Amino acid sequence: MKRSNRDGSLAVFPGSFDPITNGHLDIVDRGLRLFDRVRMAILVNPDKQPLFTVEERVAIIREAYRGNPRIEVDTFSGLLVDYAQRVGASVIIRGIRAISDFEYEFQMALMNRRLNPQIETVFMMPAESYSYVSSRLVKEVFQLGGRVTDVVPPVVERRLSDKYGTPVRRTPAAPRARRRGRAHQAGGGHEA
Image (cartoon, rainbow, N blue to C red; front, side, top):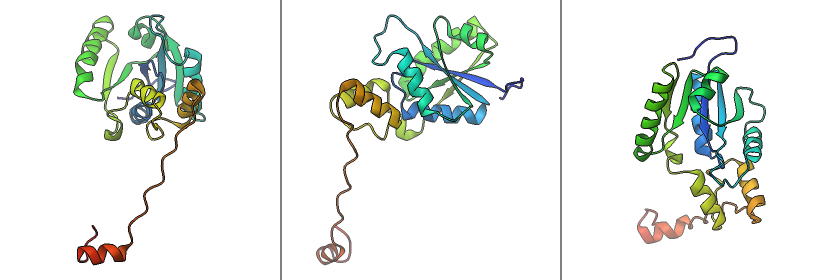
């Protein structure tokens, strides 16, 4: 699937990334197995009211991928296929978390193919542990005082804390295991 040119193959991974999650990072990692470079393209949509500005989202992604020259970050408006062609990408990466995502993404992929048959869409599923994670859910959980440590990179957790003016909630310590002797006595040798 890798297309050869002087800079190697390039895939565009579009989204609002408000904010990026570990699910997004997982999709990028999977994309890097197939393509030389992945460009995270932030859609500039004046009709939406994002939590983070476009500039903040670019900075967050750059910090999350600091030191990785295979990850690029950019912004775009207008048609995605026009943007992909302009930057020399032959593939659009789309993440699908659940079957409910597929119908919309499939329609978009078919329309993009109609608009530019030279650009393919590749659907990728994140690791199962991130299949329920969305940017909207991350913001909601954090705002209500929940922990998001396991579903976002550290830079996002810090930025959410700054944005909402609330401290980062750390993972609570694991409960202490019961004393083995007591469990053996009560359960006849099996832990209770």
